[in-house]
Image 1 (tube, rainbow, N blue to C red):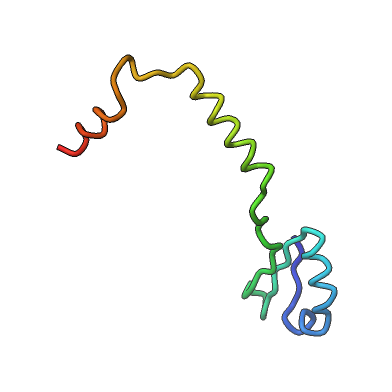
Image 2: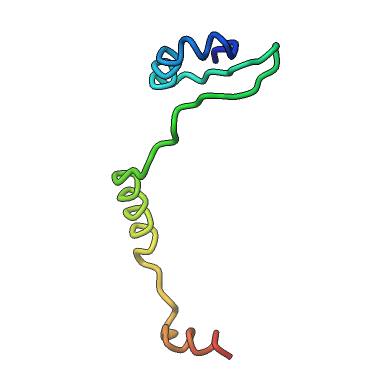
Amino acid sequence: MREIGAFEAKTRFGQLLDWVEDGEEVQITRRGKVVARLVPPEAGFDRERARAAVARIRARRQGVTLGGVKLKALIDEGRR
């Protein structure tokens, strides 16, 4: 993590953005006190990760039964 003073941050803003784009976190200080942090954005939606999660869920449900109980009966029981 880099630390930089507010005045210097103002004059080197482009370089700060380059550092953050490369994955670094930058703290901006004023009179020695941290007043802001520049951090890379969180990753967005990852389609491959979502597909892998669905595959794991489907794999876990294989062979799972309700022991002869009908799903409709369970739903109706929950409504009472």
